Image (cartoon, rainbow, N blue to C red; front, side):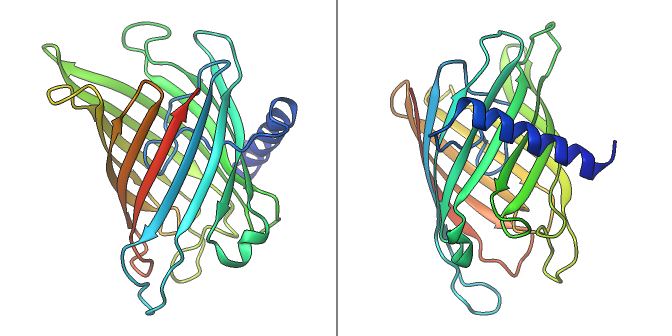
Length: 253
């Protein structure tokens, strides 16, 4: 099955799931800082997010980039222990003319870590940023990802994730306007329990010189069982783009 056919199937899947289960929701896919993670929202739970990405400098051409906001709500869909699903859509602003089409759908299927044995990794397949305007906002970023937690003599080394993504090659372009629509996904994350079980840190990478490609670092603090705030920074692979700082509020219910 070719890349275009796989993406078409994934986009169809997310549209059907969203229409069936989320007629009035505004969700965002579960992520680390920037890229999707293998985590999936639990059945009958929701996740509200409010994110802002603030330019830390001017673009290489001297123009000042807009701050981008993303507001969303994710819902868990499946009641199974070994297979989970979530779906929804984002509401984004700060993208210039694209603000006329602010809705972006997403969905994910996942298998949790250790579901089929001690060494079994978490697995996820999904699609996000399925926009409503053809060749303007239908980025259709499809991905496969695996993750595993490692430890040595009861000392946690954190969780490592690796995956691959591909999207709409008419929209995912490098600084020269050439197609750059696929790449690797990498992440490392760890709860710093030596300081507090509420402190989590992460470094991740998405490989492309399109606007999706970046090295991201950040940390979050869990203020309550259901509320956390994340602070992070994006170093874009396309050095013509201004790096951004992000603040993200996450609430589970």
